[in-house]
Length: 102
Image 1: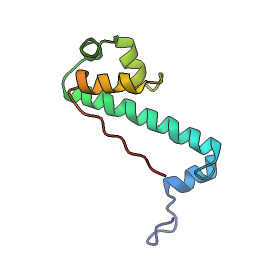
Image 2: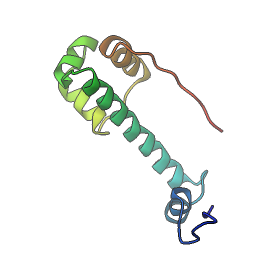
Image 3: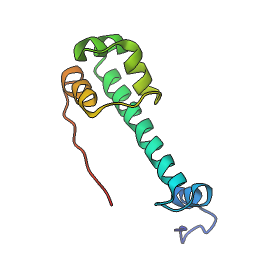
């Protein structure tokens, strides 16, 4: 949807529609999934830094290793839900809330 004030503006959805297809198209859904994994890594990294923790300290608190935390933060590793919950609850002292959209 273009902004009425400036018809030269293009929304992110319009760019993604053109490059990957509309939502529901396999290529677009793969992009969306990768983006959410990237976002998760960024959220975990920001929380860790806000708490003044190193990757090694976080790994020790939740029973994993520094390289695994690094791979998650850099979107280079899939993460199991149980491991994610350990990192958030035991490592960061937080709570995970999930939502589904259709």
